[in-house]
Length: 289
Ligand code: CP
Image (cartoon, rainbow, N blue to C red; front, side, top):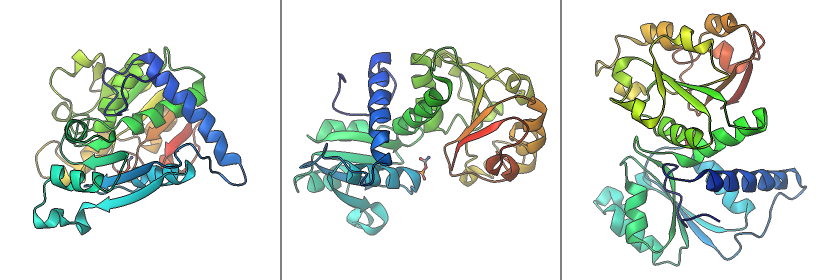
C-alpha cells in the first residue's frame, strides 16, 4: 500500500513502496505483449497532463500509459495556453480541475511545483519533473531497467556522471537507489556538483576513469547546453575529454558495463554516437533513447 495518493518524489519513499511500484509496473508491462494492449484499470478516471516545459519521452509515455489503462485524458501545453496571457499556475490548474479531473501529471520549470499543486488541488498529483528537484518516474523506470537486468538493486554499484547540480534525474535516482540498497557514486566537474552532496549518501569522484573501472552501471546525464557560456566548464571539447563516455573510454573498461541515459542526448558531448548506438567492447547499451 502506498502512503500517499500523490507521486511527488522518491525522497522519503520507503523500500516497500518502491518495490510495490516496480512489481506493479512489471505486471502491467506484460499487457504490452497482448494483441490489444489495453486494460480497464483507470476506466472512468480523467487525467490532465500539464506540461509547462518541453518533453518528448515523458509526455508520450504518460499519454500512452493512460490510454492503455483506459483513462480519459486531456493534454495541456503551456506554449498554446492562456499562461501566455499571464494566468498563474494555481488558476490554470484549478480551472482544469473544475472540469472533473481526477489526476494531474505536471512538468514545470519550478522546483516544488508538484508539491504546490498537491496543496491547492483535490486531484492526485504526479510529478513529471519539477525544475532541478525530482523526476521520480524517470528514476523508477531506470530502477526497473536495472532490476530486470541484475535481478536486484541491492549492492549494485551505480555511477551518475555529469551535471548533477541541475539534474532532477540525478536527485530521484540517488534517493531511490540508496533506498533500494545500491551504492551510488557521482562524478563531474566541481562546478556541476552540489555543495555537500555527500549528505545524500553518495561518494564523489572527479576522475571518471578511476571510478568507471569500479562500477556496473553508468547513468550519463545530459549537459544542459542552455547553460553554456555561464563559465561552469571551459568548453564542450574539454568536457568530453574529461567526463564524456567516449568510445575509447568505454572500450578501455574491457568488461560488461550497463550504460544508461535518460535522453535527450547530446551526441559527441556527454556520450559518443558510437557508444550510444552500438553494442561494443563487451559492454551493453541499455535505455539510451
Ligand atoms: N527523460 C526525459 O524526461 O525526457 P523528456 O524531457 O523528453 O520527457
